[in-house]
Image (cartoon, rainbow, N blue to C red):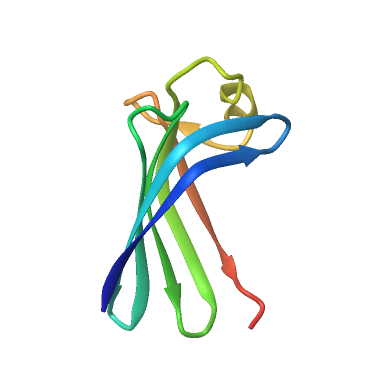
Length: 100
């Protein structure tokens, strides 16, 4: 099975609200896991790309990259938690378990 989700007018709020515009999430199954390939639109203030996987037992894992395209002040927030790669983007790795 496969599919796609387009999240229009997406926003991210941490300390401030960031207009993400459009996030495209392409869904597929692989090795008995739900796989979501995530990408932001080219006009988004933040460049987001990555792969989010979910397994049947509720485990999830996100591996991706995030970078400011416009000066919106999130670099300082991210620098305290994530490492910036040679490409200037922050390497984001996040995992856990959903309460199921």
